[in-house]
Length: 123
Image (cartoon, rainbow, N blue to C red; front, side, top):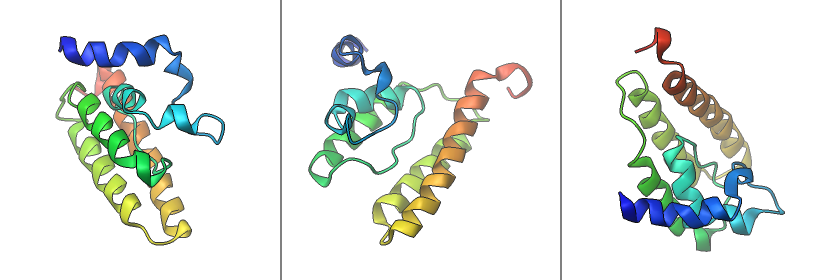
């Protein structure tokens, strides 16, 4: 746990709170293992924006961050759907297919975060 916090600290200090979405201006900072770790711990999805040479490092950080996310029976199906959709996105052969998968992924991510943070009626 301490090691994970130590890995997360540089991302927090670097002001990564603005790195929730990749843009052409922040792609180098977005596609780091540290940022991926933070995103994974916040139940965020990977939309396939990182260059291939950074993708493996990003996905490794994302998986490590996801190990911290809370397990709840209501949200677990959305976690699994997000991971399946991310795999499909990485394997997609056309931009139209990737766009459709990204739209589905945004929806799955929204529901996972919503259900996790609004426990009143769902847990």
